[in-house]
Length: 319
Ligand SMILES: Cc1cc2nc3c(=O)[nH]c(=O)nc-3n(C[C@H](O)[C@H](O)[C@H](O)COP(=O)(O)OP(=O)(O)OC[C@H]3O[C@@H](n4cnc5c(N)ncnc54)[C@H](O)[C@@H]3O)c2cc1C
Figure: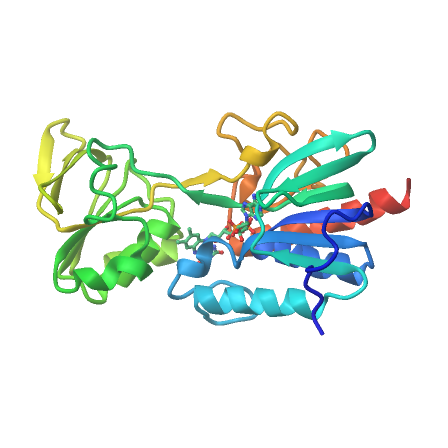
């Protein structure tokens, strides 16, 4: 029977480890921590992390393909199957603040719960970066969207644009190509960041056009989007008529709650030692998309978190 935390808030006990975040990183860490019998609390606002919005994920090792929702469901089931004496789960809870208290840490949540712990694993991932073009704020949810699987079908048989040439941008384009009239993909540099296999597959579709070295200047429309203005390598502003714009322009790390305590890089990712996931603060580790490692993927996040738990276990047991 899974042990969900419901009765023991504000208890003075000290956990060995508190894991913050229920994406691939936090979930992998929870399973490993439970099996190592670390007294662990797992806190997450939601299950599954960023790729829950994906229609299909093809590179989660051990599975040919699965939807983002299935990934979230599998992670949740796996974590809950490991709850018991060593692992407790607090879901639907958001950490708002972490402070150091002598050799321990005090974690506070938005709903005013407090927990003490010897060590912390930050696995809070990242969230969507917003498009900064003129009028982008005005047209959000009025034709400008950040989620193809949520809003894409509204644009069936219409002309749409995708902003961003990373994996998320190409994945979005692939979804839209199934039912939109045309997809124009804008990439800000000369090189796409998405995996080559995905780029090749998507660009084979006759309904797609890719524009490189493009900067989006303005979103146009009246009540709803009717186009965008961009600048390409020619330097001249140009207009494209589209009714839907899907922005996939990167991620912002979810690290506000540890600002001032844990050193972050210039874009607010947690600085870690990639050999062991240690931050510069003894007792705090971080893994996955909230960290300053070069590559961010589901399998990488899970693997990094496992490395962190190995190191946390060793640190606790060699003190
Ligand atoms: C649209 C899209 C498609 C993608 N497709 C793929 C793909 O096909 N294959 C692939 O390998 N990767 C893909 N990625 C990248 C992949 O999703 C990330 O690398 C991965 O999710 C990172 O995992 P994580 O556990 O570090 O963080 P996240 O997945 O971001 O999870 C963070 C978790 O922490 C929780 N959280 C955040 N802040 C707090 C807080 N303060 N308190 C409590 N909980 C908190 C969140 O609710 C969330 O559950 C995709 C990303 C996107 C955006």
